[in-house]
Length: 262
Image (cartoon, rainbow, N blue to C red; front, side):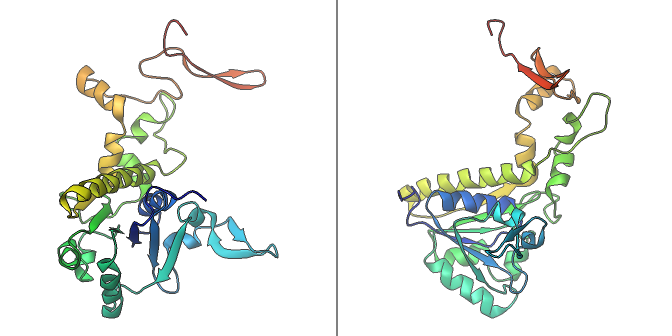
């Protein structure tokens, strides 16, 4: 098997659910050694987010949900109680030889564990510390948690998703989480490149809300330049025609035309 570009990079992954695990899974896919740290007895929250469940060789359901497996391949896993001093000390020992630490606890929780960036940096100045949270580490809403659906609503995505004249709709997958995970990966990769020059790590602050707003992309610019609030258009495009789905006798047809020549 060909070695990945992150071979030799060790990641301590304290994240749960989707945004953080999605990011660390991508790092693992690129060859990083990812050590996933889970709570004793129950593990990652999403282990119980079934059905469906992974089945064993006898066809019986296991305790691992499909949701959990979607974001946790290529990782090693250990159980550590971070609320106990022994657990925090174990993480500190791992950090000494780690390249990256990822966490997505509510802002301030890592400090209560004695695992704040300022403390871990003193143990390993080259450590890249990535925090993923709902609204960022220092915003006016930094103390608030938030799942993907909240981000899709507050970040504007639901307001432009759905049929014209209909109610706001959530996208079918947790795109806010996945977007934030992608931004976390690009931030970590950038920090690794920077560390190659400076020799020091840094603290990366990834917000689900910021990620969602950023990914409104052309709709954001339509509003800023055109001074009009985008609305719901179903499958239609705000700038192109024809660019939508059509009902036919035997199903649905999608036309996506970008230029007159096409």
